[in-house]
Length: 291
Image (cartoon, rainbow, N blue to C red; front, side, top):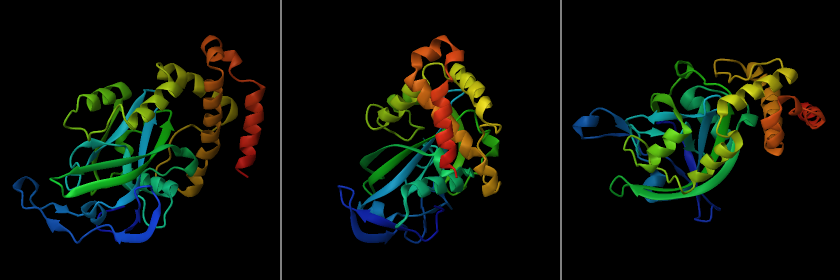
């Protein structure tokens, strides 16, 4: 959510249960004295000041055709990790809001991309506990980690960045990003590669394999048989009706993903055997879901 917007967060127990208490997220802004950040407005988070347990969403955009993740560079006025490369988008779950709607909202607010709920896949939830900024920022956060898979790059110049949150975006290969985190490169927000985020990397590797370009080309051939709409992300400048066109395509791609996982050996040897009656049955069932 945009800085300066009145927002309340639900306070949780360490077990993730609701306490019935909610807190305003932000103090009134103040200005840093440091010359290097002179004039930047910074907001102090109450839940991070007090170390309250709360929930947030992490959304990762993965471009299947190139095997790359989208990263955002955090704005210089952020109260944590300013100016560092981070998750595609992330944000707190507001009091009373749901995880999925928060993920969709944060993607639209920070990057200007609006996608249907079906595009967001919840992979796992993990608890992050850390203290930074000389003890002034205590992060006790349950993070719901979502993956949004797109077949091709969304061109970086098409993103509409929220200046208070994001300064720029870039794509980076999964391998290069893993290496950067493992080597603790200072320009990246640190995450434990062998910890919680090993799950993210493992899912992507097992699902999309070592040759993303070859797999992407094969999927595109199959999709053409079942849909007339290109598998492209629609941006927030379009209407709800416009991005509704993505729904059958996303569903079709999920079906294809299942086929690739279940029939991996057949996929390797023959494109002709990849699509058969089980897909037709599943596709019919999927079509009924949209009614």
